[in-house]
Length: 444
Image (cartoon, rainbow, N blue to C red; front, side, top):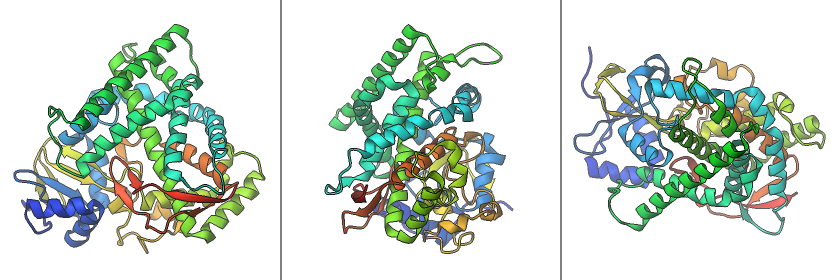
């Protein structure tokens, strides 16, 4: 028999909002542990907000009944304001069409062709580090992945202009993160933050227009993602992307492609500074496989210890730590009625720490990802890249990029934290180290 209201935290809207704003991650973890597989949160009068906390429910939402769910109205509004109607927020037939057009840009042959640029730019970045000068590793990874995405998206000509793009993307990320920190203010308010956001959108549009115009002037496949998207044609109609579609996809890929990988790299290196025995095993493996030479995609299958470290890091600190769905019709979840238009949080951060499926769920144990273990997990107990028809289109790109960068850095460099302050996760557009990641290079 369908029940009307699932259990949830006690307290009125203002009490829950205060807890949520104080520590969003703890709020979600506590709600899941105390109230089970489907939790009714209370974010405000007349609103319906739920948290799912079981692999079967995650699979139901992302895969088996994916056609019954869209991104929430809040996400479409907040993200769409900056990234447009790209794959991150696009829906239904339009999403299917756009994904089909974009997919060839992420085929293995294309992705492997970007490997040399990834390694070269990483080595150039490492030349700027000095043993006697502490630096913010997260900031440097943001800059590095920005350059990599710029080169693979637009070709070598734009790399020198990535600082400006980085500033624009920081405005986007801060604005999108705002929904996790405070109630959004109406966009018509003429406050400086809103003015900066509108200016950043206009600047990004101008940059994209310049890139596309330059490409059309040359009119050739440069081997980059933009060339693939510009040349893509629908098999049935023969139509390519409109200028607006192209802009939205390029900005979406740019934003997601650098932000998520930079945070993954930061968390990997942080965890290795805290687990020196694991770090030594990774370096020994790199020395054996690479023998002092730069890594290539053909080396990655042999780097099993590095793969385990990356997977375990994505378990503990998934860059996409939460996303949402909204049912387009009334649905039933875990025996409860959930109305159309409700917002449902799906959180890899919460799922990946579920003690029903993970031994020592809050500890860094890369060996848990030994051969066969992941396959024995319930489907969607681990899903750092999402799942179903909306699974991250750039997963193979991101995994290869992260491993090549880490192999390049860790084979030559060791780090120690340059602070005694705790490194805590800060939830926003991605899961980032709060206040950055200050490091000292002790070998390089």
